[in-house]
Length: 535
Image 1 (cartoon, rainbow, N blue to C red):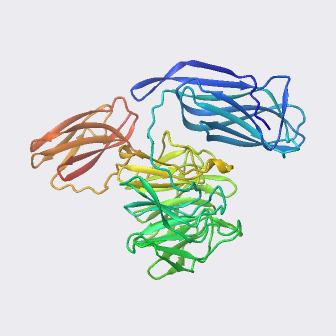
Image 2 (cartoon, rainbow, N blue to C red):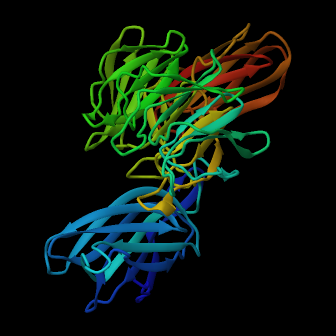
Image 3 (tube, rainbow, N blue to C red):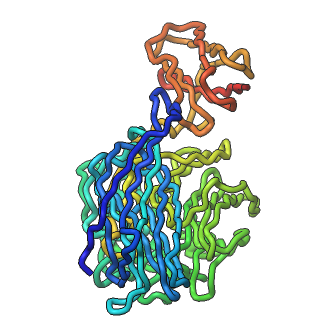
C-alpha cells in the first residue's frame, strides 16, 4: 500500500520540574506526535501504513508511549517505532472487537534524539488482499526524556562487516575480532564464513569459508591451543542441529572437527575457563535446556555438570572460576542472575536484575561483565560488578541491536552485527566502539602494591575524609576515586610527587551513601582502598 501521510501535529513542551544530572541542569521534555483523523479509518494490510514525523528536540529519550486506535474481528497488528531507520520499539496487539478502541503501549529505552531526526510509526497485519482490521485517529507517539544528549558511553563507528549477520558467534584472540557464521538477510540465510577485524587497520577480511551453516551459534577462542571452537546453533533447517565442533587454527585458518557434542542446541551460552569451554542453556526440538557441560579440547571430552536452576536460552561469562548467567528466555524473559562455582560444583542465586533481558551479548573485563542489547530493549546496556554484586544500567548512543557480538580490547568495548526486528532490512553490519575506562576499575585487579601503604580516616565518614599514603621514592602518582560500580568519580591528584607522607582531602557531600573505592598509582605500583560514606 502506498504510504499515506495524514495530519501531522507536533506538540513539544517542557515540564516545569527540573532535575540535576551530573553537573548539568536538564529539563524533562515530552514530544508528542499525533496522527490520523477522528472520523476516518484506514485499512491495515500486510504491507502496512506508515506515518512519518520530524523530531523537534535534542533529548535522550527514556520512555516511548504509543496510542493506537484499532478495530478487528480477531487479528494481530504489528507496530514498529523507528528513529532514523533504527528500530527502537515494537509490539504485537491482538484485537477482537470491531469497535474502535484505544490500545496503549509503553517501553523504556535510552535513545539519542536530535532535532530533525526522522521518526516513523508503522503498523501492518493481514495479507496483501485481506486487511487485519483498521486504525483510526487520533493516535499518537509520545517521547519522554531529558534534555541534551549526555551519555554514560559514547559510541563511534568503525568499518562495517562485509556481511550483515545476526545470531553470530563472536570472540577475540587479542589481535583480531571474529564474526562467526550467523543469520543472513539473503540466501543462503545462514553464513558459512568467518570474517575478522584488524584493529590496527580498521578493516574486515574474510578468514575462513566452507563451515557448517549456523545461526544462533557460539564461538570461543582458547589461547592455550591457539584455536577457535565453533559449536551449537541452528544449522541446515530450523529444527536441525549438529554435534560437530569445528576447530579453526588462528594462524592458518585450517579447519578440523570434533563430533562429540552430546546435546546440540541453539541460543546457548558458552564461556572459557582454564582452557576448557563451558556450554550452557539453549533450546532444541526437546524444548529449553538447563544443561551445563564442560568441554576439554585437549582430551576432546565432554562432562555434564550440575544443571542450571532454570531451563532457558541465555548467555554469561566466567570470572575467577565462577560462571555468571544473566537473564534469558523460556517463553518468559528472565531477570535472574545465577552463579556456578566450578571448583565446588554448586549453583547459587545472586538475585534479580532491575530488567528482564534475552538475546543479549556478554563480554568481560577484570571483575566487570558487560551485557549488551536485549530482545525487548535493543538499546539496553549494563555492567555487572562481580565483586560488589551491583548491576548498573547505562545510557549510550549505540545503534540498538540484539543477537549481536561484543568483545573488549583494552579500555574499548566493541559491538557488532545483530538485528533490530523481524524484517531483513533490520540486520546490521555495523561495528561501533566506546571507551569504558571509567568502568574498568575493580578492587584487587592486577595490583602490585610494592612498598605503597595507605589509610583513610575517618572511615566510615559522613561528608569528608582524608586519604593518607606513603611513597618510598619520587614518582608520577595519581589517586582516583570510584563508585561501587567501578565508575570514576574524581581524580584527586595526578602529578609528580616527592617521596614521603602524602594527604589528600575527599569531599563526598554531594554523593549518595555507600561503599566507594580509591586506587593509588605511583610509578609501576598500585594499591586500593575502601571507604564507606554514610548518609
